[in-house]
Amino acid sequence: MQFSEEIGVGLIGFGTIGTGVVRYFQEGRGEPFGVRLKKVADSDLSRPREVEFPGLTERASDVINDPEIQIVVELVGGENPALDFILDSMNLGKSVVTANKAVISRHIKVLFDAARDRDVDLAFEASVGGGIPIIRVLNGYKGDRFSRITGILNGTSNYILSRMEEGMDFEAALEIAQEKGFAEAAHELDTGGFDARDKLAIISSLAFGCAVVPEQIYCEGITGVTPVDLDFAEKHGVDEGGIGYSIRHLATARMVANQLELHVYPALISKDHPLSSVRNEVNAVYWEGELCGPQLFQGKGAGRDATTSAVLSDIFRLAHNLRSGTVDELPLLDRQVQLADVGSLQRRGYVRMGLKHIPGSIAETARIMGEHGFNIEDSVQRRKFRTESEGKAVIPDIVTVEALPYSTVEKAFRDLKESERVCGDPFFLRFES
Ligand code: HSE
Image 1 (tube, rainbow, N blue to C red):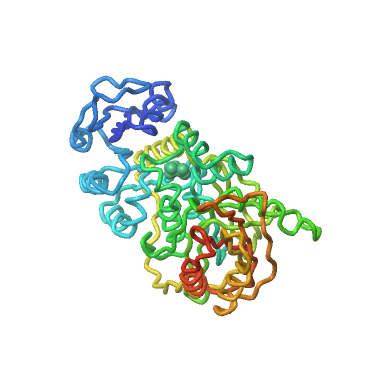
Image 2 (image 1 turned 90 degrees about the vertical axis):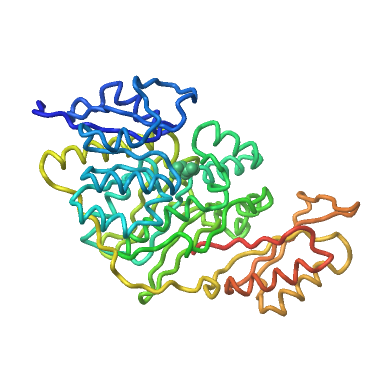
């Protein structure tokens, strides 16, 4: 196709994803769309990179103020100064593409309103789910509705859990995830659940038409999961004819009577659930539409190329919008909802704790749990995972309990931690229904 005029793109942030964008522009991916990468800015000019960009500048303003640049691509990450780069660009009438979940999740309504006011595009497909076009799907999902959305939204955590299922330890799996470019610079954002929390805020805002802020979301990462848990999951219920469970790091939002329940947590999920077989750095988003039934969207959620594909798709679509004088529709996010108190949500799960191998340990912990109203279904000691503390054997005990509120678990854990028979922190893992 012949274009009378080229669309100019400027990139701010020449890191992992920026390198992907530069490389694929240099390989000619912009040509069929009449789009050219004109300028690249990064605050660190000296960092070694796989590809070079002639005329790299250290000033973001060189990109934002360049009159030949119509689309600014923000790949700096983090909240500031990225937010200013985005707003400054939109104020100058430029369209913006970003992968920045920290900014979009915390400023979604302000940014949508700003884009609408200035009649420019704001595209952020790469902020959630890497290469899965889930933002486009959610923004266009008008013919059906659902009340619950569940995601595996952090590639690093899913990668680590997948490797741990095969026997690798946490640290070794994390190191590989870092080498492969899945993990954030501060990996605690991944393993602590915060990256998934940002992404859940974005997709639940779009799914339910309200503006949710990440800090309002209950959040647990995967750092408490141990090989004992994975071993238990694999075997649980198998002797009763079941097929066992996987452990996945889930992010869920559920709307019940205009109350939105939001949480991010590791969970046991039956092996016959579609999310159970999502492995490695793959992300997934699952819901059950009222009309169309179960829908699963999955694909690589982390890594340079998968995320670059989402950035490029946004750039080329926005170039088309500029030529046709249109912009993507952004939802108003004006629905007023109440956030549910997660402490009162009831979930079935299990308590795993290391017990000193001395008479009365099980009796004492069962008494504490009984006092807090835990109804024990099953209890199993895993001698195979025996350790030592202060010269005494410690054996993990896994106690499956009927559904009870998170707040009750927290209270009981305070008492369990005070018992001299309990070594280390007790851990609660929920069953996903
Ligand atoms: N660090 C993220 C993940 C990728 O592991 O999923 C970027 O969002």
